[in-house]
Image (cartoon, rainbow, N blue to C red):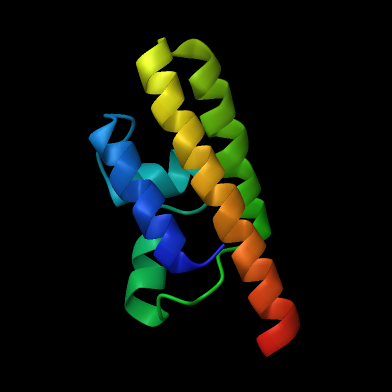
Length: 99
């Protein structure tokens, strides 16, 4: 998954009220250090790849959260999960064919 896709996920999760800050997102949802997202924003381009471990952790935690939420929120989380999966496929394709 590229950083650009992660930014979209971060925005949607903020709208859903699941997170309040990038630091919280980095620690609690990606399983990374508190500055993980901000480091990417400062040091990398939007097409920088996010680690597969961080993406996997995010998917696991979002899936578990969707199971606990009401139908409307769960449907919105499922849409985010579909976006993540699409972003993962694109990143994998680009990594194989253009780098």
